[in-house]
Length: 156
Image (tube, rainbow, N blue to C red):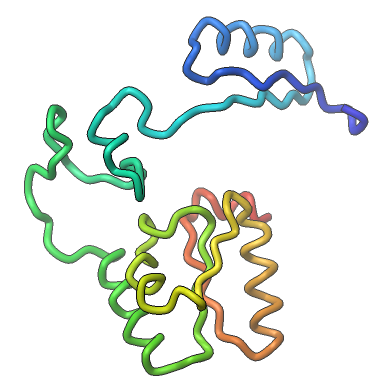
């Protein structure tokens, strides 16, 4: 708030009435507002809750009752990338992987299992991931920062 930003929260993001009230309050401020909402990924959907590693963060077509895939789509970009990272990791000890709380969705889970000491998860801090990658590269390491383009905005 010292920077001229108003703050509302934290709000239970699953409480629709509380969320609506917070957003209405924020709208009345007439300027920059941070609305801090706390949510739980997969909340209320049993197949997502059972998926502890990912909570259905990145999912294709599934049967809504079981959460199981409707049809296998074969190899996708993420799995090809993940396999190639493992292959390169075996060839080069200077390769490290960086993720921002998206190990499985970006395909680094196999690399992490094979080379756990060469994976850095910076949490939801893409800006830290990008700067860490730059620092590691400057030090002679070969970092691979795997991040969704939509989340890369936080790095800027």
